[in-house]
Each structure stands twice: as structure tokens, then as C-alpha cells.
Image (cartoon, rainbow over all chains, first blue to last red; front, side, top):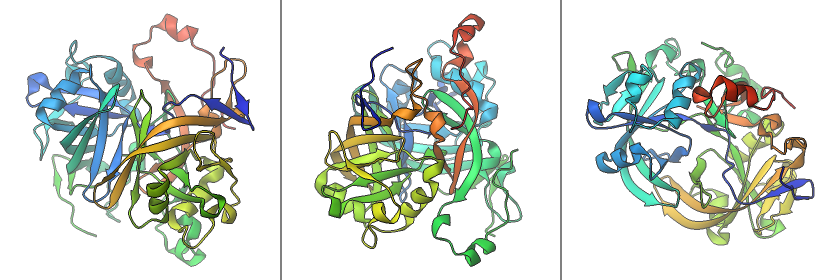
Length: 210
Length: 210
């Protein structure tokens, strides 16, 4: 065990990657079935609300790096507990050695606005077009615009019209481990909501699992 | 309720921001106590492993936007259930109207490698220096290098030397709602781990709460 430096009750660490909890998404890419591939990444997030933009950082030596660099397209597929094994496996195996869709029994379907495939089993598929590739060091950051979103209709509450992502049991990645989403703590803005406004909120149990 | 277009079992949406679950972090900034401020953001994530880089996207009209643009420094403070109220409140109120540290009874302390303050109550403080500001539309993306990390020593397992972030009960943000971290699903790489290797893993209950 290495020595830990503690100052004022805080461990003092070298710079590192500690932004957690984060999503673990399956990024799918390719422009024809025989080069379709999947890579699991956690270095992803929304960059801008309008226009909707996101990024995906990929190591240069990964098989998908070449595909996305060439096709300038990818799909971010959100994952959930049902897809946990596939999510982990697609993060450690290489598309040079496996047809990951076949190996993991996942279903590709050409995107609506991109040629890259969505993963049909994923609860939400975010179709993206790359606008810029930036070399940062170990990873290249693919900056992309969101061009279309597909979402599994079974998580739509047909009465309210709202999409209930929590029912998909989304997978969370935190410091080397995958977790389920836990208990509901509050809705955005709840800290300033009046008691009257709180009573007007839709009566939904946000802890409900699939 | 607006009409939903469904095709092959998938709702078809306009482009939007749907990368979830994500962290809800408190970003602290300022170069002297009378301009210290906190803003809660969810558009953040790791961009690169080595050198460690991350981003924080902030709307141009936010009070912190001006501070970070000028000082080129900020701290990403991870949040947990104990800080849920403060996290939500700091996301909806403005530093133009409130001293958020005082209002929320949070403790600032000058960073070790930056002049900006850390939030002492946060389990992990990531000190950052801005290397680039990019205008994307509604938000500007502050690209930054991580220069130091401080972490609450109470989450250090002194026997193994490992930092157990899950014991801090990290806050997760997903589609408009805050959640706790839920049940443990697996460790990174578990899908390809042999039974022998699995048995050699440290016996830790990753579901353990504080």
C-alpha cells in the first residue's frame, strides 16, 4: 500500500480522472454490416444544450477510433442492468477480434439520420455526427452534434406523455464499478419549490423499477 | 400531450440532451472570499486520461461564467446525498443575489494548486486550470486540466489503501431527477474474469452505505 498524504482531513492526490458517477454507454459505429462495431466508453457527456452537442473520447489504438474517424458518425446507446454484461464485455474486447453484435446477441439497425447502426436493445439511442476530432493525449475527443434520438416506447407513460428513463434501470459507472440507479432523492428545482407547487407535481413513484 | 411518433418500437425525437445518468457537481470558483461562488452543473465529464482533462459547460449568463472566464480556474466538487439540497439550490439560485457558501453553510478553503476555493464538505475536490474556452451556443465549454485532487480521508479503507467513493453515497442525476447510487452490479472487467480471478478479488461489500 502506497503512503497517503493527508492534510486538513483530505487525502492529497496527483491529478487524475475522478468525475463520477458517469454513464457507461455503448458507442456503435460502422457504415456497413461487416464493419459494424461497439465500444463501451465512460468519457462522454453533453457539451451544449442548443444545438445539442456531446463528446466521446476514444483511445487512438481502439478499433472504433479508426471507424469513427473515417465515417464521422456514431450512436451513443444508453445502457441498463439488462445490458450490464454486454456493456462490460464490449469495453474490454476488441472489434479486431470479434463481431461484437453477434457475440453479444445485440441487434444492429441502421440509424434514421446516420448510416451507423443503433443497438436496438438499448433504451435510448442518440445518433451523432462528428464535427471535430481533437487530440488530447491518450484519447481523442470526438465532438459531435446530436442529429436524432430514438427511445424505447415501453418507457413512455402514455397518460402523461413523459418518458420515464428510470424504469429502464439505467447503468451507472463510478470509480471502477457498475451500479443500478438507487433511491429517488428529488426533482431538479425541488429545493426552491413551494409546498403548493409540490402538491401540484404528478404523483409518480420515481423509485419504480421495470 | 404532444403526439409521439413511433417507428419499429422506438419513439422518434428531435435532437436533444439525453446522455444519462450523469454527475451533478458543484463547481466552485473565485479568487478572493468576497467573490467566491458555486454553480451546480451536470454538463461535465472526463475528456482525457493522461494528462487528466475535463470540461464544464456553463451558460453565458451565469454569474460563474464571468468569474471562471477571468480567473481561468475552478474546482469540481463531487456531491452526495448529504449535499443534495445544497446541490439543487446552487443550481437554481444566482451568485448575483446570494453568497452561496454562507446561505448553504458550506465551507470554502483555498485550493492547494489553485486560488479558487474547494467546498470542504464535498467528498472529492478536483482542482482545475482552464486551458480553453469554446463557444458552442447556449453554453461555453471550459476545457481544463486537473492539477490536484483532494478527497475526504474518511472514505479511505486504511487496510487496503483503496478509496471507497461508494461509501460517500454519491449523487446521480438522470433526466431531471437526483438519485442515490443503487445496488452494485459488477466491477469493470468482470464479464471476462475467470472464476479463479474472481475468488482473488478483495471481499468488499460495494453496496455498503455510510
